[in-house]
Every structure is written in C-alpha cells, then in structure tokens.
Length: 381
Image 1 (tube, rainbow, N blue to C red):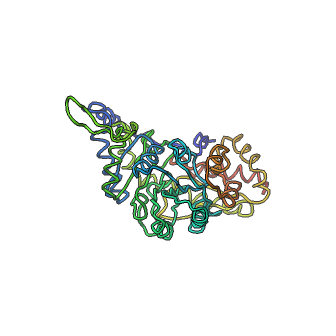
Image 2 (cartoon, rainbow, N blue to C red):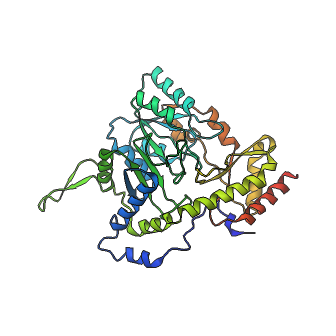
Image 3 (cartoon, rainbow, N blue to C red):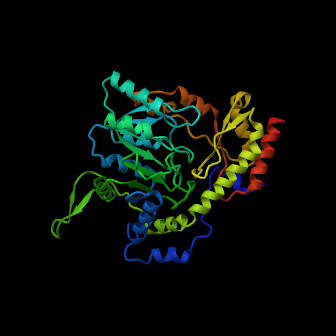
C-alpha cells in the first residue's frame, strides 16, 4: 500500500535546487526583493495579466483585494460552497455578506444563483458592492453572463482562483487573466497545484488597483523624509512574501506543465477505473486539456450517500484519506448568524453528495488501482 494516499493532496518539492534556495538568502534583502519580482512577472506571463502581486498566503490575497477597493461599507456576495476564509475576512473587517447558492452539479455559482441573490438585494433595497466567486476543484466558473449583471449593478468582481491556477476558462483565457474581474487571487499552499510552502498572489489589469495592492502589502506606508520616515495612508498589515518562498515558486512554475499533465493522466485513469460504479456515484472531473485539476471529486448517490461517514471511515482504515470540499458557509453557526441572507438549497445537496479522493503528483496508477479495489470491496460488486 502506497504512502501517497494518506493525504488527499500533497506537495511535490523533492527536486528543489538548493543552490538557488541558498542564493536567495544571500541577497541584500531576503523578503519582497528580486526573486519575488521575478516570480510575479512569471505569474503574469502564465495568467496573461498586466500585473501580479505576491503575498504571504491566499487568505491575505483575498483580504488585500477587498481592501484595495477602499469601500467603507462592504456588502459582499459569496458562494455557500466555500472555504471559511472569505466569510471570516469580511466579518473581521466589519463588512456584511449574502451567502448565495450554487449549482448542485458543479458546486459553483451560476447565473441563476447569482440572480437569486441580486433579486433579494433589490427587494430589501440592499446594494452589494463586491462579488467573490470561487473556481472549484480546478474547474472554472462561467463569468460571461454574470459579469454583465455585476457591471449593471455596479458590483466589483474578485475571482478566487486558489483551486484553479493554470486552468483555462470557457474562452480559453487563463484563470487570472482578469477579463471578467477587477482581480484574481491565488493560494500556493502545499496542497495546491503549485506551492511556495505558504504564499499567494493577486493578478489584475488595473494599474490603480495594482498600486494600491503594492501599498497595502507593506502596511500602506509611504516613505517621506529622514526626519519624518513614513506616512500611514490607511491601517494595513505586513503581507510580504519571503525571497526563499518566491524561489520555490519559480522552480515550481518551471514544472507547471508537467504537474498539469500528470494530474490529467491521473484523472483520466480515475475516470477509466471508476466509471463502472455509476450506480453508486458520479464523477465530477472530466477529460480536458484546459483544466488543471486540483481535486478529484465524486458525487455519491443512494445508500452510499446515506452511509457517507461509514464509507469515509472504511477508506481511512485502509489508509486512503478523503475530504469534503466544503461544508457550506451557512452550516457554520457564527457565519450564518452574521449573514444578511443565506441561500442553501443546492449547496446542501452538493455538500451531502460530495467526496474528495486523493489527487496529487506523487501518486501513480497503482495508487488508483488500490483505491478502486477497496471501493469495489466496500460496494461488494
């Protein structure tokens, strides 16, 4: 049995060039310096964006993006199938939010769930000003029609691309190109498509947003004179990335095509091996050269859905780590309590059906065969 299955996601940094890592620590500055600048230029190249700003993690990227709008009374629309970070951020900065529903098949917001939230806001005379859609599992939200609605309603779009760095949208634009948004955020946590150990980035095509983000990253301070060393524009924090993290990111970017192809081969083999269980679950993932899959997801049916906990425990007993992405935001009492309104019908369905199986570049076909064998034994087919 492979050790590769003890985590649903796993970093792949065993081939790091330690000579370059060491040199990154011998520079004049070891944070937010030359390696970070080079990393940012490479991200812009990959995402086809004008500007890229590195930071210390994906949560910071979201917070920085929200702060860059300089909105006094934040009213955000956020999808219910989501990690807790975005709702926690809005709570911490005393904003308000509407938790909108998702498509029950994709786990992502669509035009209809967005319009449901907009109609509620109009009925209650609420004016939302930020929308934060999340691209899920590597898949990409179709923002084409949503953008038209958001523009009409004067709502800023911040894409959460933490799952989908390296994916292409329906128009073959890279996630992060910001053709349908003011900015896009990324996470480079160890389980993501590439890693900087911890780190994040924001892309944008708006020069004013870029300049604000640069300032926000460094406490929003402006240098003035010797006797009066700096001027504080707005309260902010330190969101800088270390040079050694940027160097790891640069080395990871050189392998991005290799990582993407490896994950796609694993997904294709998963589909081949598991499609015979279509009576018990459907497979979320699909064959596509556009998508850089972050997660491998199955949607349970019937008795398997009802016995989800037992199924997960069985797989865990056999050293196969599963995960749920995600518990709806509205299922967290504190987040629901602080929401203006929650929509959860389809989110509940997706949550109850959803299960994540291991997917990362250290896996091989034998790992998938092992998973297949254990599922077969459990289902007794």
